[in-house]
Image 1 (cartoon, each protein chain N blue to C red):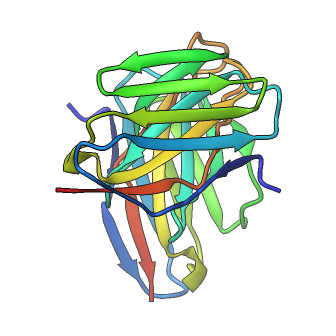
Image 2 (tube, rainbow over the protein chains, first blue to last red):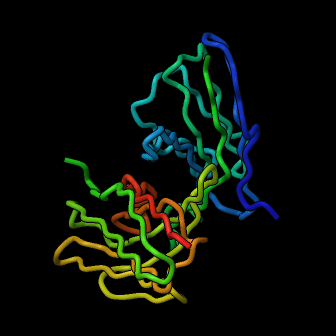
Length: 115
Length: 112
């Protein structure tokens, strides 16, 4: 059973297009995250939702919009894609704010290439 | 200066050697420390989770935390080619702190 899953695994698209990435976790966690990993492997937090409520919103262009329909799902929509958006995007989840443990569990990643 | 510093390597060792990885940090409020392993083209997977100072051992892996020096280490004994991966340290101030601060990751290759 996959704990944190993402679709699609690969996404190749043209500049200016709009695309979405979906994430689902079956761990029963309350908190979910989106990270961007650049070519140098550095993981940068973008957004986090706790029980469908936005709790982290880092300095990210407003072309990026997260949406959490329920606490098991967190999607990322990107408008007007730019070359610099090319990266691997990871979804993660954790038990939740105030729980005993705060480690995060990551999905397999979505490799986005903007041409 | 970054909040968490980690030498990106790369680090290449022969099979059977001890791999030593470390991170330093500047935020004295950090109490929870994690090590993640990331294979090429995969997501990070949690390897070790420790709270406050001290050592934790799990099989061939040992995590050490020295809060007085703001320094954490991961040791891999009897390294195997399957240990070849990027290792990322991560830390947070408390269980209410859902935001992890990551190191840049160290790429390790274990030569057969």
